[in-house]
Image 1: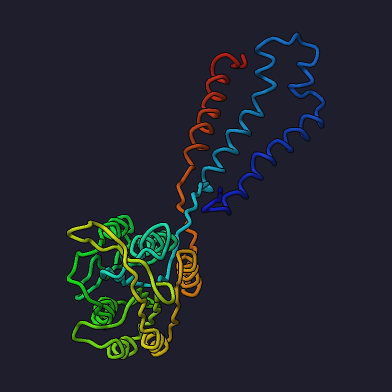
Image 2: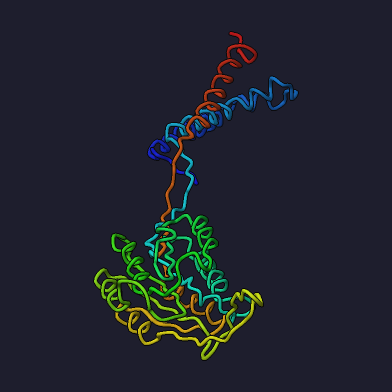
Length: 326
């Protein structure tokens, strides 16, 4: 886009315009203008230049006036100003996550796939990852580098931590990562398929801590209702499947969510789990404002140089080739 920094100088464009008007009136009054004198002359180069000279002078003057007005060209940039949501993803990697009731893979494989999709949907938010089994630790702190976070999700595997289900410790670890955050919303999304049976912090105690720091917790229970097939390694017969009862402490998970202003969800298959994370994504939207910035660059030289060149050409022609003899 274009604009003039000193637009009042544009009033000077009336000077060459007035000169042309006065010149035409004077020529009409005396009836002997240069154009009239040359009307019957052959159209030589000199005659053409004599006719064009006043217009070249006017154009040169107009270009100088435009240069005085300091024309500028602006380049606009759109900047996103986000008020993001800080989210800690908490993922259960205990032995029961090997159950294969989420076809065609086990629970952990499907959960990782859904979590990665969730991460990719939220490019403007800081996200982190806590994994837990018998203990809990931060796999990845809050970050905007979602590429490295996705890599950390890929590294989560069964047996990476001693077995058990320390839900309270996992939630407390996630809240500790969020308590110093200055984001407008601080969220924990905790996924588990069991009951709290390890750790020093009870789930409801961790929920109270989360409430104190204004952290909202969404809890997700994964597993079919009743029994699920889980692979076990038999030293004699090798890999075989056994039926295990699905025991999810839904009452506690729901109480944790309600205490912190979140919600509890139950996923009984892969599609339902994807739907749940999609719902959470919609519930916790990031506010994105767009701010437009314009960088202005002076372009007066684009008019000054050709204007001076035209006036110099007029002066040279009048002093040489078009010089009038006395």
